Image (cartoon, rainbow, N blue to C red):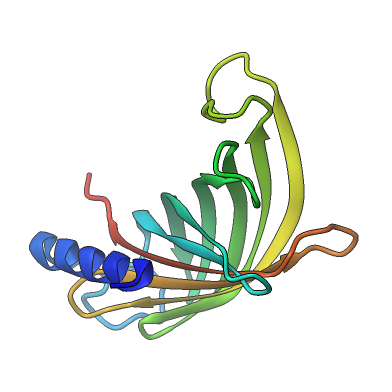
Amino acid sequence: MSVRRWLLSGALALAMACGASQDTGEGSAAPEGLQIAGVYQVTGVTIGLEDGLQRPIHGSVKLLVEDGLYTAHVELDTYFPGSEARAARVVGTGDGRIEGRVLEGMVHTQLVAASVPGVDVGFAFVPREVGPRIRSRSRAEFLPEGSVHIELENEPEPGEQYRPTRTELVGYRREG
């Protein structure tokens, strides 16, 4: 079973066990009964389009909703491209529009890496390196059982160097 299928099936099973929220998102164009605003725990994989190399990625996405539009705040942990020893954090924001169960927009992020291999990026007093700025076309779909499936097509911001990748994430809304 591929990593992608394994992640999708695990997230779907978890979402089915947790159940979907019955609240409505204020001002959104979402179907009644679908809560979009909130914090989502997500997990997935980033795949290099040129070489097919995969690296795991996980973290949180916070969604704010107003008048059929959304704003996203992203904080994800992964590895620096080409390294399985250098922890990296993907941080950034995005925005876009809501159409039913689908969110489409752009996300602007940057990689922040620990300069010491094997050490968490957030560990105090560890020097950090700022990596390339990345822009991503994003599409998220809220499935009827309560999970969210997010697809990102990643490329460098103008003037940056980053090999294009695709990220697929699945997750669930964190309660409380």
